Image (tube, rainbow, N blue to C red; front, side, top):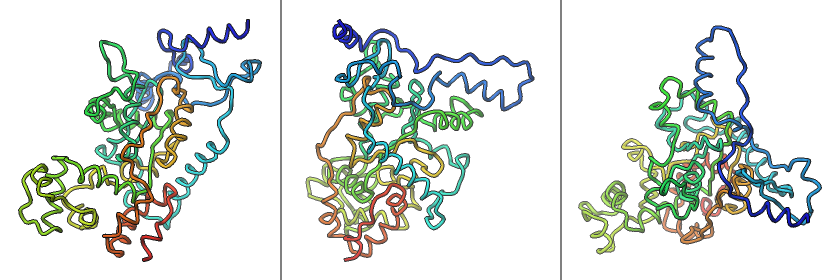
Length: 388
C-alpha cells in the first residue's frame, strides 16, 4: 500500500498553479509617520516575491520515515523536489572554497584592478546590464559570454516565463530560438531598473542582491579568448567582421582596404589570425576607441565580484556537476534541466597550439590584462605559456 501511495504522488509532479516557496508573511501595522526610507521599503516590497529568501537543500524531518531506496519524491503543487539524499560534501566544499577565494582576493590589497574598491552605488548603470533578474524564483544571474551563457539564458527564460506559446510558458530550454535567447527584451536586467523604478532603482537592486540567490559561471580566461576568436572570427559573422575584423586587418595584417563583407573576405581566404586578435586586445588604441566587447571583456568588469557577494560560482570545466548542484540549490531542478552540449567546445589542452604564433612577451602582457580573473576565480597562472 505504501508503494502505491508513493507512485501516485510521483505522477503528480506537474499539477496546476504554482505556489511560492513560503507563504507570504503579513506586513506589520505601524502608525508612525513613514520616513523617506520607509517609503522606499514599502515601494520595494511591492516588487519582491514572497518567500524568496535563501534556499536550503535539506529534507524536512517528517520525511525521514520514507523508504531509503527512494532518492527523491515530488510534492504536488510545488516547483521543487524534496531530496532525501544529501548533496555530496565535496560539492558543498567546492562552492565554499570558491566563495572564500573571491572574498580573500577582493580583500587582498596586493591585487589591484580598475573598479575593485568602488562601492556598488558607484557602478554606472550601463555596467549592470549583465545581471539578469528572475523575481519568480528569487534569482540573479550574471552572464559571461563564451561560458555557456546561451544555455543559462535559456534557463532564465524558462524560469521567468518570459516566453509564451499560445499563452503557455515555454518549458523546454532547447526549443527557444537562438535569436530570442540573446534578445534583450527576453531578460529583465539591472540596467532596466532605472526606467521602471526611477529613484527607487538602486535601493531595489541592493535589496534584491541581499535577498536573492546570485550566481555566475566562469572559465579559464585564455581558453575563453580562444573560444571568442573561434566563434566570432573563424565563422561568418558580418557584424563582428565590420566592427572588429576589418580594423585588425588594416592595423596588423597589411590589408589597407580589406574586403567590404565577410563573405567576400572568406571567399578570398582573408580573416584576422589569432595573433592579430591578441594584438588588438593589447593595443592601447582599442580601449580608447570603445570598451572591450562583452565576449572578451574581463569577468570582473562584467559581474563586479568585489561589489556583489555571489552565492554560487560555477566553472565551465565542471559545468555538469555545478549545474546540477545549482538547480537543486535553487529548487528548480524538476522545472528545468541544464542542456549539456559538447559541440565545438574549446578545450584547455589546445592553449599551447593556439598561442604558438603569439610572441612570449605578448602572452605576458595578455596575462597581466586578465590576471584579476585568473586570481579571483582560482585559475592557475599558465606558466608553460609565459616562461618559454
